[in-house]
Length: 225
Image 1 (cartoon, one colour):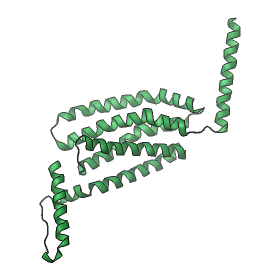
Image 2 (image 1 turned 180 degrees about the vertical axis):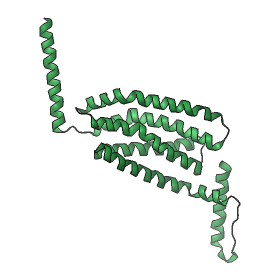
Image 3 (image 1 turned 60 degrees about the vertical axis):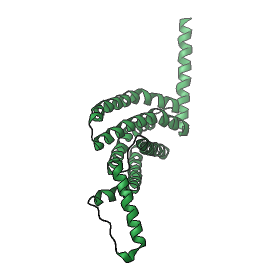
Image 4 (image 1 turned 90 degrees about the horizontal axis):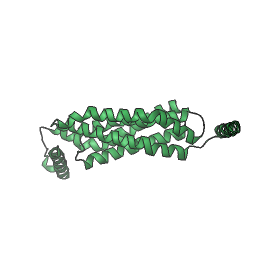
């Protein structure tokens, strides 16, 4: 697919030269001009599409989570996954073309499953930050790993298909699952625990639970003696 990118750049350079000399009334013709025009605008369209997608996801998350801090954390995490994915695909040999653009937009939806769900669980639970993140991990870590492994296994046969579009899609899914699991299991929990502030009610409840636990421990210790 790299020769298509080179052809697109060459056609664009020729158009620039012809625009500088309008008196010749010259026009560039190529039978694949429709595809070449898509390649030339893929970068701008991809950035715009990712931005709109992330904003829409942030609005949806705001309805379900109800925490501005949580939505901001999720938005930053999804944005990090998307832009890291684009850079990783470029490092892996993918070109900036319509195929990559579609694959990245699909992968943006995949990344929500590994970030928004654990954040939703964190904000719906009660108690202190540490207790919330521990319970969220106990309930969400297993399903997240199972989802990631099963997705990779489903996409694994596609790497043996010698077609650019299918290989690009498989690479995108592999990278997206890895990046999403890394962000969902490491980056996101750190941000949640660091940036979330327990309110007075939560702090009082957590303190009461700790005090009750200490009293129960003392009582059990007295019975043993």
